[in-house]
Amino acid sequence: MKKFLSTMLPVFIMVAIAGICIGIYMIFTNKLPKFGNNIQNANSNVTNQVSNLSDVVLSFDELPRIDASGLTQPLTLELVRNFTQDDDISVNDFNFSTTEQGFNKLLNDEVDVLITTYPSDDIITLATSKGMDLEITPIAKDGFVFFVNSNNPIDSIKVSDIQKIYNGQVKNWSQIGGASNPIRAFQRPENSPSQNEMQLSVMKNLTMVDPPKDIFESKRYGEIGDLVALYDNSENAIGYSYYYETKILYDTDAKISDTIKLLKINDIYPSYETIKNGTYPIQTNYYMIKNKNNTSESLELFANAVLSERGKIVIKEAGYIDN
Image 1 (spheres, rainbow, N blue to C red):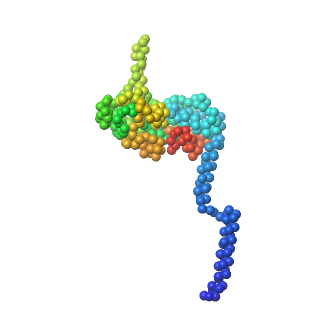
Image 2 (cartoon, one colour; image 1 turned 30 degrees about the vertical axis):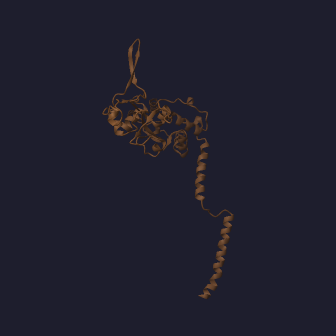
Image 3 (cartoon, helix red, strand yellow; image 1 turned 90 degrees about the vertical axis):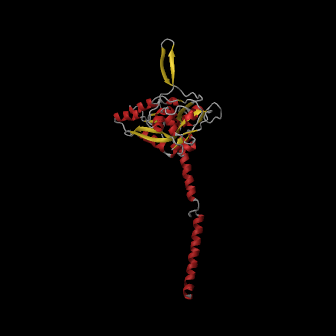
């Protein structure tokens, strides 16, 4: 045993010295992996991702033919400005349409891509009749919200109670814990994005009562027609819209007595956080819609950029909620 140790000990010492020398060499030549390199690499990837925001994806002249509904025009404009790196581009540079007109343009091959809300059943049926297969891709989240006058004692409402209000079963606020006032349930015009969303996501094919209407008269012809009345924020009123639109139209962040009050739905208040994390009950999306058979290079570049991490950053910076 002593003979073995006396023979091998010099070998062990030489191996140890060699290992120390190699380690010192690798440290001083930066060839030894150091603790935290994975974190540094991750941060580097993020930095590269953000720096890519300044790259030009397409010039303005190379863009596909784009249309957008009223709700998504600010979003579309910010995407175009970022992808072209041209901040001078404005709404005036596009022939943006209403939602219905935009879908008609898409179905008639007058535009390549439409950024908007979900198509109505009528639009999908029309697309099918034309032999067109629509590719409908969600790109941003939103919530569908209900609001009342700020003095209404009701703070939270159930989805089932909303359904009962709008199909005529509940007609007075006292039936769901409010004051004894008849409910004035405002609606949106037929085939508008908000009305389609209400029927699709909330009513789920339940028949809705006739909405309040404004009568228009002429001195010469008398009554000449009526239109769906706009929400008037009266004491007994209730209305609905998209969260994004509501914040803009009614300045819901303002703490003033004459503004509207957003209702909790099933005790969940609509906010960026609750819509983003999916806890708010009535979720919806904005979509990028195109003909699946349209494979133009400019359209593919634009669509891929919208769906990239860069696109998500732009969507968030434009004030929308990214998926």
